[in-house]
Picture 1 (tube, rainbow, N blue to C red):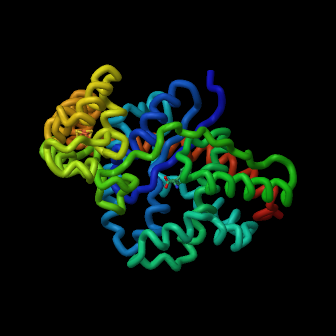
Picture 2: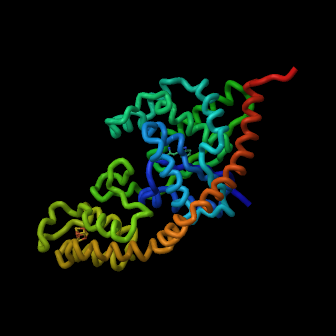
Picture 3: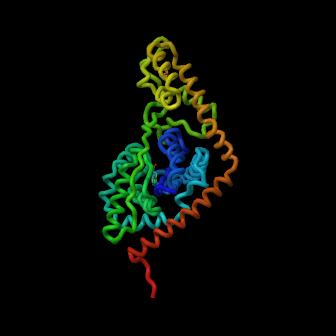
Length: 332
Ligand code: TRP
Ligand code: SF4
């Protein structure tokens, strides 16, 4: 049946937004039909930056699990779970930490980038430095063949491979598997302000946003900054709203918008309203499902509990091998 095993996770640092949907979730839903898939909510990873706000992480965990199911991840087809429900991730992370040189971690571009991006947060912890080691453990513990990730995650995946290679070299055999990336072709989705859509920039549209919020957000989005008045011609190629039209609007209509924007035949207000309607139509199923699930947190909880049982059985198997080759523990 399966062409191999796939694993991916989403950090519980906020609800899933459209960037997460196009960059990850949409792809995962497709993959669950082709591979043996494991998808999880990375709550320990969220702690690396949000350790001072534990209540927020708990809330996000529940939201993201709801997002997963609303988008169409199906517990009959894939395994959905919480990272912290499978303690073996932590054990493997400790063990991999023993063989990971600190300079490897300091070289990961996201290490310094994130520190810059999240100024005001204290990111001096060993946990934050060790973020990629925990991620390597997440992946290696399922002996995953493939990890669907966006381009921003490639350095983490490369480091995972290096850690696995070192582990296999030191302890012999092929105890762990070197994963390959499954690149998501989706380009980075611009946020409402034109920067990358991000939980930390306050420029995101969330799957959980209600109609009024979605309307307000798109209506206030930055368009072509040179198009000040209704009669000014616009440049779709620099407009954030047009970037969404490219994703959501049919090609024939897209060409008309492109033309009418350049000739100022269409104004930004109407252009935005049209996008909002298209968005509502395209996301109706997901957004309805999400509202339904929100009212049934016990159901979401149950999916995660059952997922954790399945995940744990694979993780425990790997840990037995790992403990054996590292010669941990002894019997008389
Ligand atoms: N670092 C990933 C992100 O920020 C989340 C993540 C944690 C992950 N562990 C993983 C992704 C393992 C893939 C595989 O999105
Ligand atoms: Fe952007 Fe549409 Fe305004 Fe053109 S008309 S600048 S595409 S919002």
